Amino acid sequence: MLDLGYLSIGALAVIMGIILLLPFSVKKVESELEAFLLLMGLVAVTVSGRWSLHLVGDALTAPVGITVAVLLAGLIFRRVRPRLRRAMGDIVWLVGLRPAAAGFVFLLGLCSSLVTAIIAALILVEVVSALRINRADKVRLVVFACYSIGLGAALSPIGEPLSTIVTAKLKGPPHFADFFFLTRLLGPWLLPGLLLLSGWSALQLRPTADDSILTDDTTEADSGVVLRSGKVYIFVIALVLLGAGLAPLAEHAAAQIPAWGLYWLNSTSAVLDNATLAAAEIVPALSEQQLLSALLGMVLAGGMLIPGNIPNIVCAAKLDIRSREWAVVAVPVGLALMAGYFVLLLAL
Image (cartoon, rainbow, N blue to C red; front, top):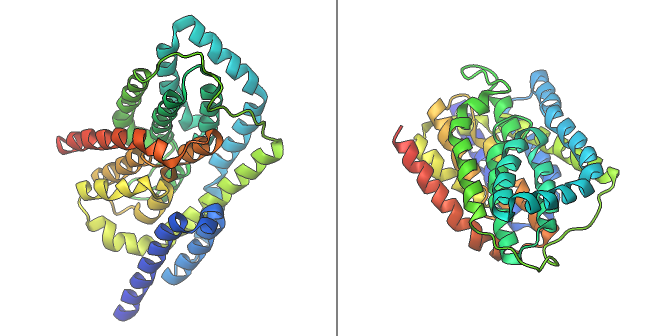
C-alpha cells in the first residue's frame, strides 16, 4: 500500500508537470485549454481514486455562478457599448484625463469582483480605444488596469475562475469559506493596492491628438457571448476535478512549505494561469497565513506577462499588444508590488 501511495504521488507530480508546461509550450494545447484541462482533471481524479457523487455534483454546480455572471454581463455589455464610449469621453472632458483614468482603473478593479474579470477586460478595451492618448500610454494604462482587475476579481467567487475554485475547495472545515471569505481574507491587502495602481496609472498619461491606434471596433454576436460562457463553465469544471485529483500531491507538498515560500513560488503565475495553480495547490490543510501568502503571490504575479491572467489575454488579443511591449511595462510594476507586499507580510 505504501509503494502504491508513492507511485500515485509520482504519477500526480507528472500530471502536474504536464499541466504547467504544455499550455505554455504547445500552441494547440493553449488554444484548446479548457478541453486539455478537463482531460487532465479526469485523469488526475482517476489516478488519486477520488471519484464520488459528491465530487461530480460539486464539479457541475461550482461553475454556475461565474458562468451566469459572464453570460448576463456579456449580453448587457453588448447593448451598452456605444454609450460606454460616449460616457468616457464626457467624463474626460469634465474632470480631465488623469483623474478620469485613475478613477476608471480603481472602479474597474473594484467592480470586476461582480461583473467578472472577462467583462471588466472587455470594458477596458472599449474605454482605451476611445481615449486620445498615444500607443505607449495606452499600453501602460491597459497594464495597470489589468493588474487592478486581477486584484479586484479575486475578492469574490464570481470574479474569476481562481476565486471560484478557491472558494469551492475551502467551503468545508477548517475554513468554511462562504461568498465573502476572500473579501475578508484579501480585501484589507488588495484594496490599498487598487488605490496605488489607480494613482500610479494616472501619472503615466499624456494627452495627444493621435486616437487612431490601439482600437477595437469589432462587435461580438450573442452567439460569441454564449460560447465564451460555455468555455468558462467547462474551465471551472476542469479546475474542480484538478483540485480534487491533485489534492494528495498538494497535501504532501504545499502544506509543508512556509508562507513566504508559497508567496515566491507562486510568482510562476506570471507565465502560468493562476486558476490552474490554485486548483493544484490550494487545500484545506493550508493555514490562513499560508493561504494569504499563496493567493497574494498568484494575483500579484499574474499581471507581469500576458499568459498570467484572463484580462491580460483578452486585452492583448483585442488591442494587438505584443508580449515584449507588455513585459517592459508590467514586469517592473509586478516586481515592485511583490517586493512591497512581501515586506508587509514579513511585518505581520
